[in-house]
Image (cartoon, rainbow, N blue to C red; front, side, top):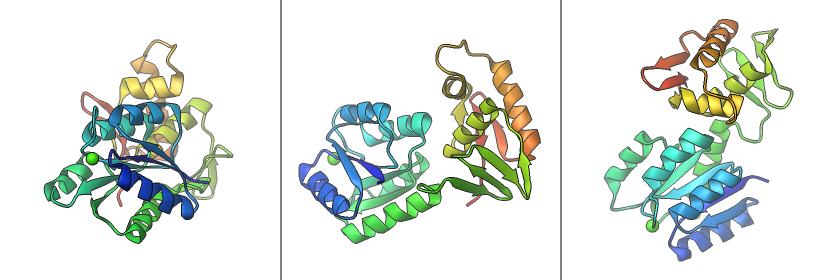
Amino acid sequence: MKKILIVEDEIAISDLLKIQLQARGYKCEVASDGEIASNYIENNQYDLILLDIMLPKIDGYELINYIKQIEGTPTIFLTAKSQVKDKVVGLNEGADDYITKPFEIDELVARIEAVLRRYNKGSDIQVIDDVSINFVARTVKKGDKYISLTPKEFDLLILLVQNKNFALYRETIFEKVWGEDLEFETRTLDLHIQRLRKKLDWKDKIKTVYRIGYMLEIDG
Ligand code: CA
């Protein structure tokens, strides 16, 4: 069952969303302010997050950075209809889609499904051009050939794929792949990136982002 976090401070809206989404087979949790939301996100795995922008304590713009940087969870902004310019900002900030309030529940569900499909949630396999990655079997194929990756190279690949088109800080990547206990070593990370680029022939796809770190750039 797919799990959705609803971040919304208007109880009338969050109740409606919860009831309607649960009726369609989603498991839902509600966070009524930004602080609760960040705690939930830190301690749980969600398939998708519905994120209001105007929130007590931590607003949606701040939260989206946290979500994308730390978890890479698909996110849809819920925005007030009057804040049209927010849409543009919202998408620039890394939301996968937005919907204006008030909304039709069917339209929201269609957008949720589209975003989940794009992220390939529920599928064990993600295909990027001629590379197919099986998250469960932990195998990678390029064309017909299996590519042999070390466990760390595979973890690194998954992290890049889950955060595609989003620049990740070197420190964040290191912490996620090598763990918080190890001291950050840029050389170790850079070597793994080089090997991944070479093995997958992804020299153009895995970009070095100046002063930040790395980003997997994928069209469409
Ligand atoms: Ca609000």
